[in-house]
Length: 86
Image 1 (tube, rainbow, N blue to C red):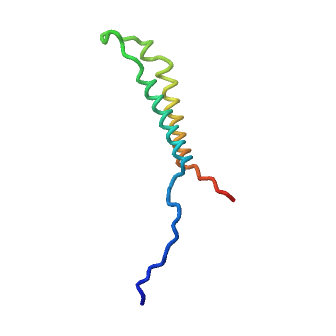
Image 2: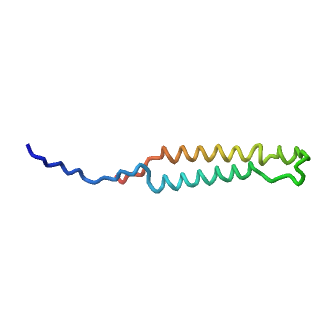
Image 3: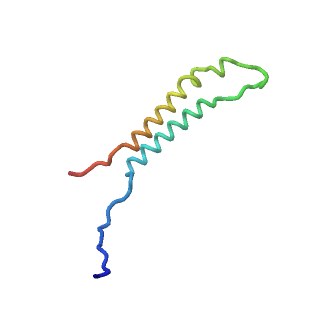
């Protein structure tokens, strides 16, 4: 018996490519914008409830759409296969 180990050629063991990371970064940016829009501004007087500010179109519609779009971009970035040169 010999104690020689077989040489395994070095392969690219990276799970994601640069393209995947760029898509992931874009997804995080879109989600961050959505969360920022959802947070909105503060009221001048905390004792006064302003329904127009709380239930604005930006907070109720646009921000959640951006957050969901960011999550879809993240799923796409994870599932995207690297390009092969055939």
